[in-house]
Image 1 (tube, rainbow, N blue to C red):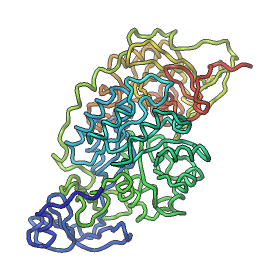
Image 2: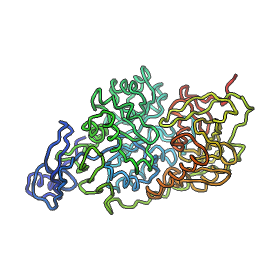
Image 3: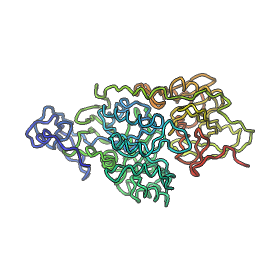
Length: 572
């Protein structure tokens, strides 16, 4: 699709017949197509770059030799993982130079269905930001968990046809794709032949013939590569590889040679899942650029990965370039090496300066009423319903977690091992009473319990603890809050983060949410003895039955490699 045609006024400004709204002078403009820096002025009219060079303007801003780049774009992310409602997320990332994202709302869709996607798209039209929504392709992510809703290919077709969605979001059920599941393939096929939409992927560790089948089915990208060899194979076979740097999954350093060896084609940066504390302390895509350059990626290539490449992949035709006719999303760096913007313009309007949002740039948005009161477990579980009791020495399978990766281990442990914690997943959408019980290792909880209604992707209640009573208290408190994350010790709350919007997001300012999270993490580190660096991120993913190796859902223990339920105990 071509860029939107310029208005007659923009053309008049381009010709020099009328004054521009704004003239940005003294800048060095990055040119993606030639990877050059060009010293020129930018004339802006009606939110569009009308032309290069000096001309009359109603307002002039001299940036004093700053580097000017296109606005940054996150190639793949989930708003829900930031725990912030849309206005707070936009306000948090604009000062860091991010002016657009490709968002997959499959977390809220797992809770509330198509309505959540539609209401998010409506809200996105009200912020000074390009927030493009993709149609969630795997709700639920697998048949081994109970979600609040189900989307089929007809739902995706409608979301694409009415303009709500811009493409098909990550196809997580890769075994279904590879083995030709008719419904999964039908969801992929909604993207073409005309008009053609992108189909994002999710294929951790998929290689060889299985990858061939996945690609042949029509999937085009992946953000789950964890090794260079995997990323190289996928890129060689024509797949776009998104280099991810989230709060828990940090793959950018390992994958940086993919760009240093082969150049920036078919690659982009993404965050996938980034906590508010990370956004506030380290930044967003600008932080990814900083890490990329520190590990050998040329700064010009980093800019391409952060702006032009994601714009080209996703068909954001007005973004990713500062040539005439493109939307005036501009990031100014007094010193590019810092990757901290001194000014940010979105659609021709200055929205941030020196790391701070301009007053009034982002208006307060009230979240939809339908996002509230989504925790429905029915009768609260008793302590004995949340734990499994076996004789000491019994061999059991345990979900093994490890810092900085979402891949879990299939650990064989013995009852009585002090590293072993109880784990349970409680269905929270339809009050079915379903509870999956098992064990986890890697959290290192010596006492108490932690629990969350953020539990990818079906977002049931997941709880891990040293004893049943504290686990039950955690579940009960989350139902009172309408969702959130919590830590309990001896029956008392020692830290909590209320998330009343679909049980996934806060309705509070980003700074307040960040403070709540910091207090919660400090409490469990000092009082419960946890050993993992990001316990709640790990907790939220132990139910995700589409990433290897072992997961626990409300249905029970799932061996993702075999894609089947397995017993907790192991025959000796």
